[in-house]
Amino acid sequence: MLLYKTVVGINKQLNKLITIPFPQLEMGTDSVANAGALMAEKGAQKVLIVTDTMIHSLGLTTSLCDSLQAQRIEYVIYDEVKPNPTIANVAVGVDLFREHSCNAIIAIGGGSPIDCAKAIGAKVVRDKPVRRLAGKLKIRKRLPPFMAIPTTAGTGSEATVAAVVSDPSAREKFTIVDPAILPDVALIDPKLMVGLPKPITAATGMDALTHAIEAFIGTYHTPLTDRYATEATEQIFIHLPVAFHDGTNLEAREQMAIASYKAGCAFTRAYVGYVHAFAHQLGGMYNIPHGLANAVLLPNVLTLLKPYCEHRLALLAEAVELSTAQEFIDAISSLNAELGIPTSFPELKEEEIPLITKRALAEAHGTYPVPGYLTQQQGESLLKQFLEISA
Image (cartoon, rainbow, N blue to C red; front, side):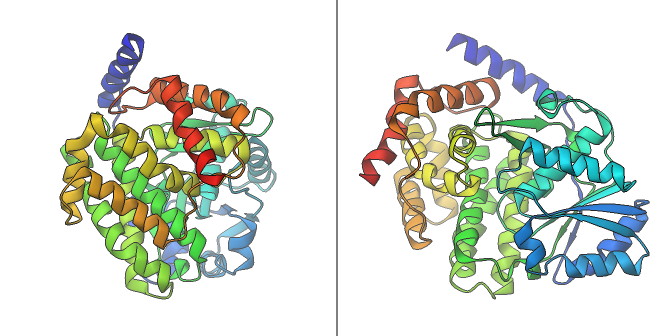
């Protein structure tokens, strides 16, 4: 525990020394039509568009491509990013960037394409094995002009200095953290989110809520991150159910996009916690989508952490017109139920719980300003709840 507190203290001091800028923010219905002009201002001549197969097949890249063509900006599309982007995804993207002599990057999609694009840009300027770029401040070189266009309201990756990449051979994830990988432009067009399937709306929305809550209860929080996290939490409680039940509601979609961005601004400065640490391991081991893993874990982890941060949880409860920390946790469980979020991980193998827990605690205790310290036994007991629920 003493070592953990020492590491957190050192990280907190380093965090104060790191200046995290904000991306240029462009927002509004049909704002994607401005993407070409914005990239022309950044000097883009040939763009690598990073996305996934579903986004491309749904035609969500069409308006973007039209806007680039209007500015006579050439482009090449890489649409094979996995839901948990892999080292191989990054390598293919880098090869395409170089083969086609690109000088700019646009990511369009959820957190996976955006994180993949960040890692591609990082490797373009720091030509090292991607695993060696993991950790803090390993890039320190300006990326090519970079725009992020989220099509989900959840990850907030358009506002963050982190990228999570999967290593399938090791069945784990690692994180690149550096202000250099923050997008130059975050373009948020709620119209791109209208056709989002209900399960993705639910999981990504709860991902944003997790970002806001963990940023708020962690020990790195500041008045600025508190404001962003509180506002995001309030907006999500109001607008996520509406967006889930009526995906064509542009107001709800826009408010969720704003909430996701605010939560991203909060957690890129105040960091996350145990929910993310365990979700990353579950994603690396079983390829469980990150937002879904966060959503399932969130109420159970908060229950375990309540003795350490009850006052902070009560403040969030007040923001959503509830009275106590427990009411807030119960409301999250109720919201999960309304959104069809499961209460177990069918993929989870009991014999792998000790390894998952060990990796999660190593990630959390080496990186995140968690409000209280969990032991290996507590972590294993936490995960076993999901086995018991599924039985």
